[in-house]
Amino acid sequence: MGEDQEMTVLDRSYKRAIELAQARLREQRPNVPGTPNHGIRSMPQLNGGAHLTGMPSIYGMTEWLGELGHSAEDINRLNVIHVAGTKGKGSTCAFIESFLRIHGKRTGFPRKTGLYTSPHLIYPEERIRINFQPLSRKLFAKYFFEVEDVLSKGEGRRPRYLQLYFIFALHAFIREGVDAAIIETHHGGEYDSTNIVQKPIVTCVTTLGLDHVQQLGSSLESIAWHKAGIFKPGARAIAAPAAPGPASMLQKRAVERGAAVEFAEKDPALPEGAIQIKPDVLRTNCSVAISAARAFLEETAGEKPSPLSDTDIVEGIKQWSWPGRFQIEVEGQDTWYLDGAHNEIGLNAAAEWFLSHAQSSASPKILIFAQISHVREGGPVVEGLARALQGKVDHVIFATYRRHEDSPVGRSEKEFNIDELQKLYVETWKQIHPATEIMVERTIEGALKAARRIGKESGNAGMHTLITGSQHLVGPALALIRPPPAEEGV
Image 1 (cartoon, rainbow, N blue to C red):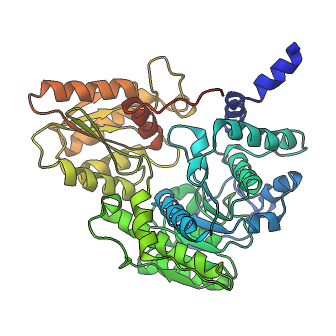
Image 2 (image 1 turned 90 degrees about the vertical axis):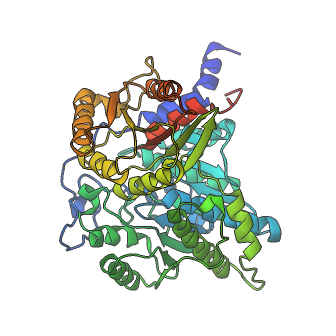
Image 3 (image 1 turned 90 degrees about the horizontal axis):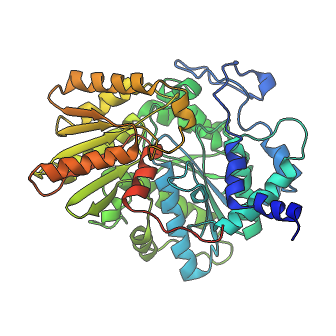
């Protein structure tokens, strides 16, 4: 093999694919106001409305897919379930996939599921799953370069990071021949790059809350307006229960789009005592998923309907897994509680879940927290979490997203003064719980070592540690606590 040919092979590796995808991350969100010339079709006239900036991420998606030879009808044939919402999107998507996969094993439909979610927890291939299994690294590289080879030769604007990943996912689903595709929005809905599916089978909106307020608005009604942008004529519209204001907005938007929203209350088919659906927020997400799976099977039934059975539900819950969400890892006498919550709704739920397990223990209770974000202010996030934990943690460790001392400094950390951010977190916590022992660590590995040391020195049996604030913290922490097996040959 010649040197040039060998270089071509190397350049088409999994590692090279990741490097090329990472290169499409933009340095920062633009501050140029969004205008109709930037693809904005309409804007909500609401108090607390959004101030969109730059070009909406939906802009250009259809054209780029067209360059790959994928038409709107090709995407419609994937039988899409499209999921938006503030909290619980990922776990709801995973529940839907589990129910449909179990149903497919029993009946033959769906034969093959596709699942697209973001961000990934540990490895990028987790974003694109076939029958819940992440793409192998061999297939990841193969399909990535099928997309990259075409799009890199095009003229004009090229897709950014998340746009590219969604195009890549659709391409993989089409090539793999999935007959049910569950797709999670990135954020928002109306202008999200995933909102190019013209004829989804089912659309879902999970629990609503205040997040991404700069882009989506500072009122729940404005956020509901954006999330409901995924509703489509003829598609079933399912939503989690919501307060009257946002619920009314969801209903209004559904009518505008030729749909009728169905609110999914707690489903009586949920098995009592199933550990997979504790805490209660998971019962809400699971109920939305059951409604979505039932609606999907009703709409795709044809002449021989085969509804979701109670057995499908019980087995789907039993086999459900969503790493990094309400996850417990036992390591000798130490117990780690990992949850990738990043906003008020999720962090309150994570705190309640942690205390329900650890509050009665005499072992030290520890929090490891990191959040480095342009989207939300860190001070109020830490304040809310401090109040939710009710002074029941003995030690707080503020960390960063760096795994080891020799890990490269991430993009988000380059854009922030980490010392000042951690100082803000310490001062905020001290104002609420001045007796808490607080330390600062520069790496995730250092934070884990500090927590283990506290447990060892306490004289009690180990420790209980909650790790939360971001998936960028939880993913590396999980990989350090329970290292995943390496995939060879890529």
